[in-house]
Image 1 (spheres, rainbow, N blue to C red):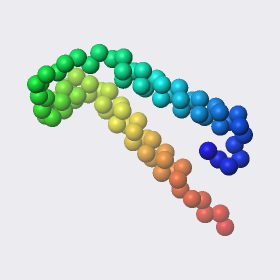
Image 2 (image 1 turned 180 degrees about the horizontal axis):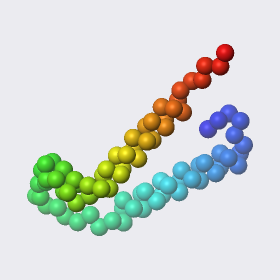
Image 3 (image 1 turned 30 degrees about the vertical axis):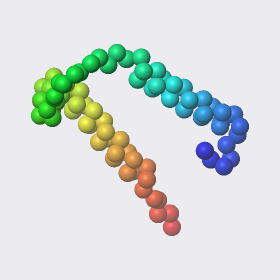
Image 4 (image 1 turned 120 degrees about the vertical axis):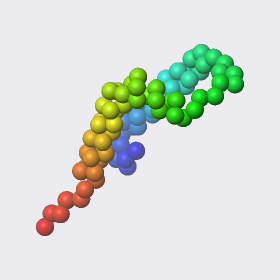
Length: 82
């Protein structure tokens, strides 16, 4: 939080973080995870499933993450004002 934030801004930020945390915890604790027992899944099998069944989604996510990284680099650059 910035030094000049008003009390309303601080309360709003805390509420947003609290709601996101509550949503995350609710999701984790209400999902029926089931019993996997002694099931062993190999890494190669996971990779095969990801790229055969969800190939387009993985590629789109990769492009989006690349764009975010490039955007972060441009935002982080310092301007040379002389």
